[in-house]
Amino acid sequence: MKIIVCVKQVPDSAAAMSVEDGKISWGDAPLVINPWDEYAVEAALRLTEAQGGDVIALSLGDENAKEAIKHALAMGCSEAILVNDPAMAGADTQAVARVLAAAIQKIGGADIVVFGKQAIDSDVGATPSMVARLLGWPAVTLVSEIVECTQSEIKASRAMEEGRQQVAAELPVVLSIVKDYGEPRYPSFMGIRKAARASVPEWTVADTGIDLPSAVVTWPNVMAPPEREVTNEIIEGSNPEEIAAKLADKIMEEKVL
Image (tube, rainbow, N blue to C red; front, side, top):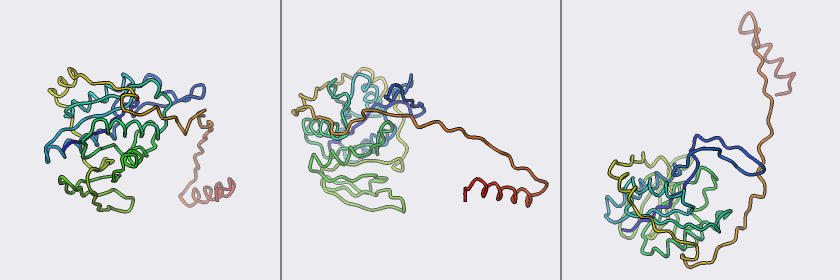
């Protein structure tokens, strides 16, 4: 079985975002693998441990994206590919999806493509479905459990707000994984050493066989929310009934109700 897992480099989840001159800034926050993508790597590795095969990590980005790739390699992926093209700066979700789909087709022979639920820097969450549409494959999103997987079919449980949904799809298929799937493994010492020595091939968009897609959605400006002054008032009284009465009067006075 051949599985491709798509990973992305993002600012650390503890980083504070700010807006400077109409652009998003993460300050000096370190770059890490998208946390959702760790669950995707874990799912891909478990599948190949059960079925046999290889997991290829695929990422789109600049040299910094190699850190996410090396994290995936340290977890256990067998190889990795980076699509590094400066012309992709400012690419929107559909452009990213087109490049990823073209890269997946160039790699060839994939049975399953796995994504994390979404990226924490943009929170769009549409890329897995868009890639599936471009490939002409079924998409099974928000996967919390892979119930069964054969060489021709996969059965999975999807996490929904009010419960779980059991679904089945033919391979090849695109999956997106949620954290309910299970805790991602820590990179082993030997895995970290292997990743440090690994050579990661780099492709341009042209190498994938397509022309650079134009963005159809742009962010011409980003604005920070207006600051609000918040004041606190402690309501005191000799007993709970008096305090409750004063609170009720205050609520009516402020027209909260």
